[in-house]
Image (tube, rainbow over all chains, first blue to last red; front, side, top):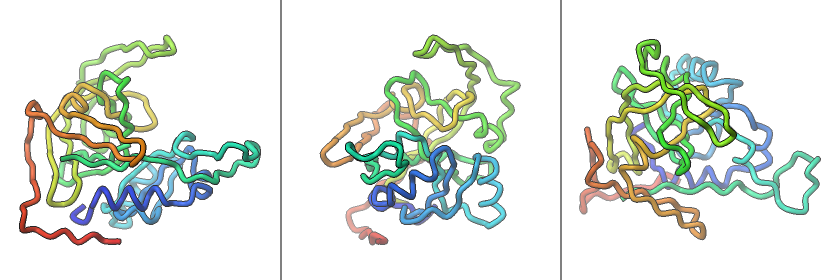
Length: 95
Length: 138
């Protein structure tokens, strides 16, 4: 994890397309350290951990995608199952 | 959410998104963390907690070590006794977590700032030196 920069990670992660994130609700994902891409998806943590270990990937950040992690813009058709507003997640900073 | 590292037996850290929850008395890790960390929960003390919906949850407690990092050169590490329970994702609550930080939530900037308090039981730390230039990978 020598290349993990939290602010860069969160900035890029917040720009990840919400409609793509919406498809992953209820799944576990492995984010790249720069937050730009999802490098692995699993039905549960055990399966994804094992797969990433086989690939030799420890340079990831895991996240379980809950429905509230994806926002839907007011006025859109709730039955369309699409999100048009990027989910707002706080960038973490500590001093 | 914060990206918190949990120390594995080989000394490396497993990073995962923790939900920051001021409504949780404890830091709670899902049960899969126990096998990840090599912790035998059968030997851990169990307590039964009441939840907001009047249900109850069994929580077992064990020690873990956390790393909160902004950059590879700026981090704090501490040990804490935390709970393990049947949860889908880890919760960063008060005991062992938030209790050691002053937290500021800035909605406009979408930024949460955690400032370590003197009570944080540090096991390791690193802070940027003035002459170190950080190259941001974009």
